[in-house]
Length: 110
Length: 113
Image (tube, rainbow over all chains, first blue to last red; front, side, top):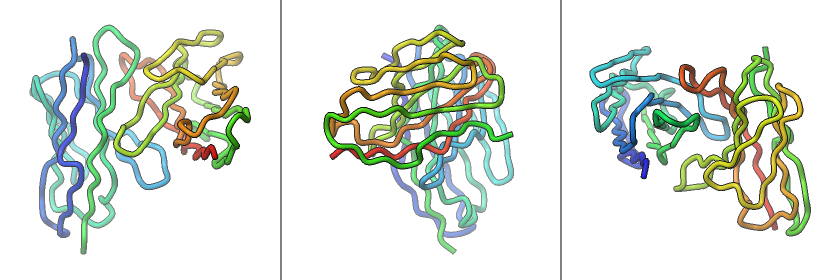
């Protein structure tokens, strides 16, 4: 069964304290792995798509990486405005659907 | 360019009442999706559509119906609401999910008492 697990469930960081969020997956034939950001009371906002092991993508303080079993979202020197829930989703090769993890709630304190 | 819009934003229903949630997108996307989001459960797919006039079941379709009469609109119906359908509902659309990401609407918070 296709599955996505995110850890930790919640993460509290001091401003400037770098860390990583984990997304481990089991899927038959990965077509793509997606990272989204979700602010309270809003819909998910697309961040990155990764397609193959070894691929990396960056956007401001965020960097996403992919291996054959997991993806990491690295946050370098976070700011309070990075506080949000980060969602990971995978798409299996034979479907048009995404399978979402339950997310990591990140809080960054000044 | 409004992207994906949802109406209403909030709704309170009594058990047994019916309602329709409307999703509209102005990006000419073929694929549209309805999800529900519950604490600790993540986003779960209810129904989806791969083009005008088509619909398909997702992970949790029971108690819901959908229609895609126009390419830009995707309607989610609850015929007889139950407290278990209290949730936040998100609509999403995509040009081609095999190549492109999904764009999400702002959500509808539904409470069934």
